[in-house]
Amino acid sequence: MKVTDAEWTMLEVLWEQNSMSLKELTQALQPINGWNKNTIYTYLTRMEKKGLVTIDHDDARPYAAAVSREDCARQERDELLTKVYGGAAGDLIAAFLKESKISQKEIARLRSMLDDMEV
Image (cartoon, rainbow, N blue to C red; front, side, top):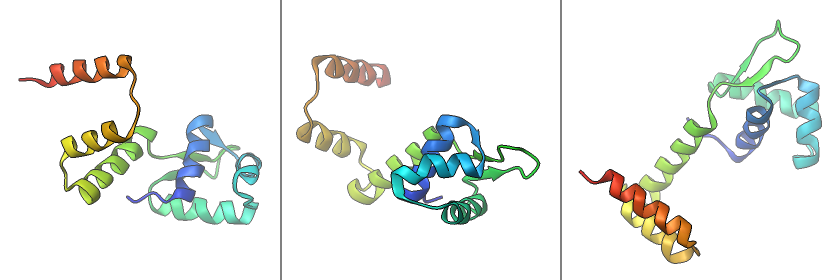
């Protein structure tokens, strides 16, 4: 399941609120991307077909995320790891560490995580 940037934006709002009406979604998303109610509704129906949202027509707040943020984040990481680094997690981590400033606390946390992974 590939999540587009636009879908991710909608899911972020739904993850924060659990379930929403079309009016509430429009009010939340309009300042972010300028979408109107019809555009949002179109996205929601497409996202339902992809299994990203649920629509309960009997509910006053019928729109909810059908996938967790964690599952979507995992998929994005897996795709990046496979596409850019050929599945080599060490190369991905090394690239991030070379190009990002990391605090002593984060270094200690990474060391602890690596130690925990030792067999």
